[in-house]
Length: 363
Length: 161
Image (cartoon, rainbow over all chains, first blue to last red; front, top):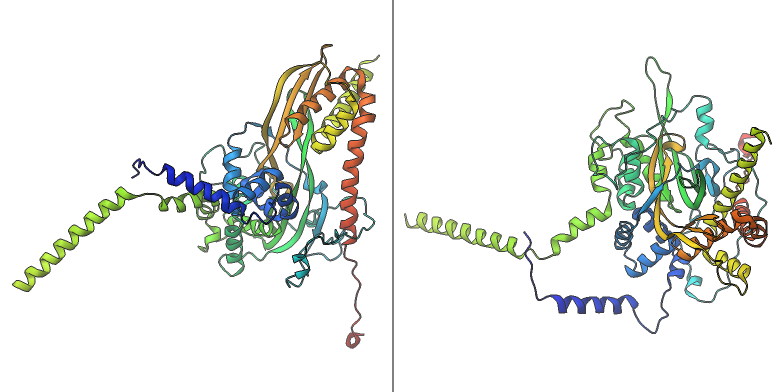
């Protein structure tokens, strides 16, 4: 129970003023600009865009500055801002096969058309702190340039599909369910689950994926392909009567090739898990693919082994960090009346218990 | 002109407008505004009536399960749109990625002027430089990516030889 409590205004105003001062930190140190955050903390920006479910690097950078680097608080700010905007419509589904790839690797095929392209990765770094970065005014680093091979970079799963070695992706409804427009409702079909996972908390989705690898609903994933790059976003514009590109976004896509499935009537085929996330967000995309695959147990006719990652209600109800933090943190707000009644109750129970003890002792 | 010839002229006009609007939508705000301002020189924006004041909104970006399957909602992106009409009746629509109201209005003006017969001049002055810049960004990233392509070579192990 909540009651209006007055008298906190001055304290709150002063707390917020102090927050602003603390956010700025030592004034002897140069202030961080939004552009610096956008350019130099870009993976934090990507995470806020993915979990905030709004692709706008400048806004995400501003949110990170305002939140003092608390990324969940920044996601909250982005989600709140988004609700103030009208939605003009929905894009056509993006074509990740036409992506301009910065990175494209496969853990299943060494030699594949387009090749293994590492891109700007932390992989193979030694994870030793680089004290050279502590110095300022370093020369601007310059990457090597190669000769780009023009031509398509086909999806690895396409090769397997051609030989019928992997399950085809079924068509779905042209207009998928949207959990930002209607309350989450079960059973949740795969498009709805994918929407929840792509905006889910990276830590939560990572841990769920990890649990499947450790044996809680194992699904034997191979990373068939991981690609990061830019795709154009195309939308039909009714007043023009045709479609146009309304922009472009950087996406990370992970396709897993999983344990096969067959029956008396169908020869064995590999199954799939899928991850697609805003920005360069590789850990999240791989995690999403593993959890997507775990949640597909029912449609693939597998057993429910009782693993947490197989439980759609558990996963989807707990993946959203804004909902989770809202409910978790509200318990620190004043609950004076609730607690007062608890106090009265425990005092009465203790009085009764002690009286009973005294009576027994007297008898 | 035969019907099919008229149809193809119509298609050609639509294709070039579509290409123009797509280039404007993806243009970085600073580049677009700088090019527009050099096009104007000392002039102010051409006379126009605002049919739809610049409005910031979102577009829900969709993907497909497994890249080829059922569509799903990936998340939204910011888009700003505007529409204008010139005194001669030409209507221009502007949609730009992001939240720049000025860029959306400028895109709509460029579209309207192009519809009103200035397409060639505007293409040379504004759209061609934007296309070149977009291509430079794209090919620059592709060249860096190409330098990180793994060239496998097979090691011959002595005991297996």
